[in-house]
Length: 232
Image 1 (cartoon, rainbow, N blue to C red):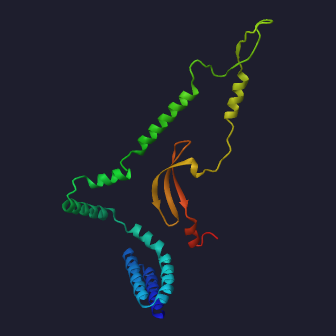
Image 2: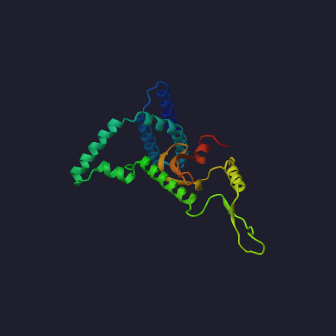
Image 3: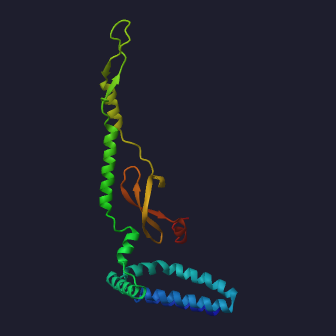
């Protein structure tokens, strides 16, 4: 057990030294993870009790280096190199499996990335305006008029319709009053798709059910904050 603990400590010390010398890379983190996994596998074969203690120690070390490793991987990402690798994989797939369809276009279609969000948004806004116009205008019904019973003569049951301007003024004043702020809820938004999934939570593309506007909503996982001592 002491030997395994010493090896993990040496790996952590080497990682710290390379970080201080600015020699650390994402490849180094891959090799570190592979070495730790190999060490844990060998320890399980020799002693189950030592493997339990070593598992806890390795988890703590991986939890410390997890976020720097992800950030470094994003910084070192080369889109051009990835595109060339994708072309090579596409060529191999066409040769070995005889695929004739356009693979990138197929992937884009399945992910729903070939849609233009601006066109969809303009269509939704146009549809909303048409609904509002139909709701506000009703043929044959004058706005602001209120039927008030007034007798045209003694004993006659005939009523006349007279417009009342006071009611319209009150309604206009009420509509101009500022509404109280209401905290948004999940039910107020329509989920569209997942944008990213980070260390603290996931970012979703959502649409407001009321205004039809699109927002990026980030849902923070409390468990991840607890692991980083951000929440008591």
